[in-house]
Image (tube, rainbow, N blue to C red; front, side, top):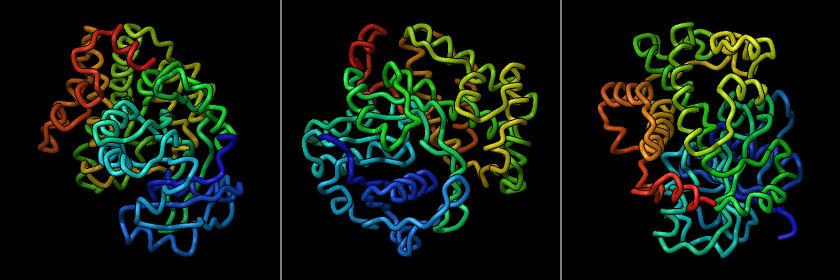
Length: 362
């Protein structure tokens, strides 16, 4: 494949609409898919972009039919919650041709591994699979068909599975997303999932306020108090301890938050997570979830903290703060995230040592 021109965006939420809209404005042929007919109907007249990008984007196809969305495209981009990766992998297995590019935007923690296991189990042919750590754009829906695209996520970690294909796929995707930067492997992109570091403490330590006000407060600006910030810092220390056992060179939360363009240089130098939140210009207007029944818990605990602690066990690293947050989330939501979350078996890594895990992804 010389270049990517035809793209299927699967997912019509914040990230999907932002990616589809921006790529349309750049001149690519874009199809957008959602499982929800009601959601798709809102986009029939196009997607309006605001803030860093201004204009109205008209995808070439807006559909609820998956086979219609992906047939003959160069790139299939999944912009869906991590909890949906498995079901999409099974649905796409009979539809994708050999060597089509599949891009998880984002893969969060273990998303590429989980997708690969389910895709193969469902009889899928060989594809070229890659992922990012988080969304390519910092964005939020401002209306049913209007998305505010505030900025690109700077220095966005990107890796292929296996990692030997990262250079090849990065060269293909760079024209679409110049903000991508090569990571060592999907373990690095997975452990750079800072949503799993910040969202669970922020939500679970503000449970009463969330349920009482239905999220009528600013998440980054007001929910992350000095006490909550100290818990975030503890989660981050555990994340870094696991990374060291896998010989991953990843920055501390405060470094990456600044590198991604999410806070000031002065906050980075202070080493204060609390100050970084107070000085996060792109996040300053983002409100808290309206309830605990939200991806900040379901995704960032079950498909963020759970796989991190699973990999920690394989590396014999203790993670008491992460474990506590998983337990609290399970109690508060009445579901066992150790059962429903992304465990090693779902990533195809059950029973493997650190060396065997590294070999499997490389």
